[in-house]
Length: 121
Length: 108
Image (cartoon, rainbow over all chains, first blue to last red; front, side, top):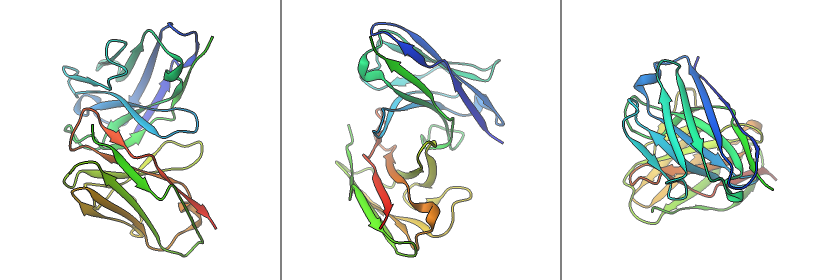
């Protein structure tokens, strides 16, 4: 059974940093692209960042470029999102999601339960 | 950036009725659209990919159709567990991947 377990969220002041983690199990982690999607309270889904199965290529939404860094540790089966210079509008539930197929098809068949990031002074 | 516009925002129906949800893309995305279901307090669940393919374990009452800029998710006969929010998503032109704003299917 595929499991994705996020952690690392919390309350942070504007300008602060957080590192989110997503522990993956139940599938061959280094065969699938991984993605972070966020959902602001009461709002819809917003793609944040994706990383190739081998970790060599990364993609970001414009608002995350230069502030967020996605990475993966294959030895630990873990996906990360380093978030710096956080802003109030980064407040959201952050989900990690697994690509549905072993290529960059970018549909998501498994999601974690999410970790809540709150940016507030 | 591809903008996906979902309509209606809210659909009020009774169990057993047919639900028809629309997703319109700002430019052609070929067939590369997926649909997700999200219930309160839960992560999204993949229902349909590449317009019309049901994901693993998805009941046959869910079907998808369309191409280019117009896509439809149909629930043939609503079950109590189908009342939720539904999102479309495109993968034809990315980054950025984009989602629609969602359609809430509520009990009438």
